[in-house]
Image 1 (cartoon, rainbow, N blue to C red):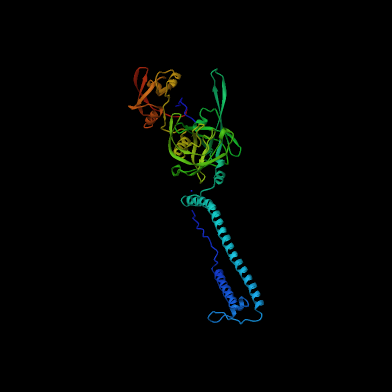
Image 2: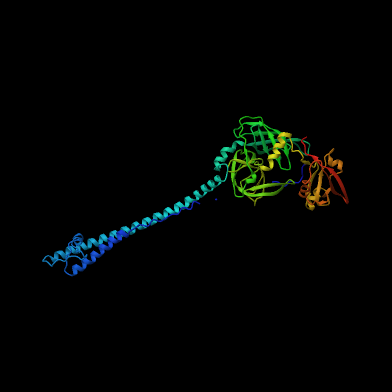
Length: 450
């Protein structure tokens, strides 16, 4: 079934000790020298003549008091000599004190500078510790972005499509498209979005090494927007499927794809912004995770990898607006594992419902006029011939109002109610046709490939 309404688009807290310059010994020496200087001055004033500092120290009594000399005829000479020594001593003392103060300042300054630098380095250490923490809590080692890319880039492929279309003048033309895909095994199976290859007459896959192959479409699940294609190639590097249930908000991820259909192997990075977002795209409500990694047209079907180089999601959509940036969405890989297995074995997902009819939301009067109807609601726009829906009595222009007595106001309401059933079930659907209300019994068809 197809819809006509398009809704696209982290301490090693190092303690830094400031090692202060220890000048207590020098201060003791200086104090002693200063005391001796004072005693020398007192002695000089008492007509005492200390010869020099060493003599003074050597001629001290046991009680620590200096010996005194009698006045001699040489007193004037000794006075000048004493003054000279005293001057030299004072200059030397000042030099020592200045040197000590200078060393103290330099040491303090160096230690301050060292603290600042180490504080800056701790940012790197914090990051490394965060990685180390994750390693201790994971069965595998976290890697740098470059390492993740080295391990996974050859698993992501470029996909180009050609679709034959007919214009209003009944002239046929070829429409080209592009997207991305991820190799999932050595046999050449590749997972991508269904909307990437939908309706394509030719699908070409180009590997990271430049080799190109024509691909065969194996099957799809339109409700998940997943398709499986296959190429006949050797020496492939399939992605390792991770566990999307283990994802955490804020976790680092790497996105690899083919933006603009021309830049294959492009890498962007970001985080998991949110989990379990219910997003409706083309009438299908899907449970997706959100990321701020840059996503552009052509990234659809590309891979999102965790820090262990494991595939955790398939890119599917982004919010597109001039005022919105960094809001992209991906299908959790756990949601597609069983689907992939079904498609590989059977070519389709057994038990999936094919509603057969096409429906769309009519939300406003302008939309109603465009479809030439007078009401708003869930409008039936296509009823295939020889289908269960046709046999049940559906007609183009019908408005669906309920399913099994559950009121339906939107396509999303309808699909939510339908999800409670399986292929083969019979449901009662109420429709409004003009002024007439009718109840139709529809046996739900299984969505099988043509």
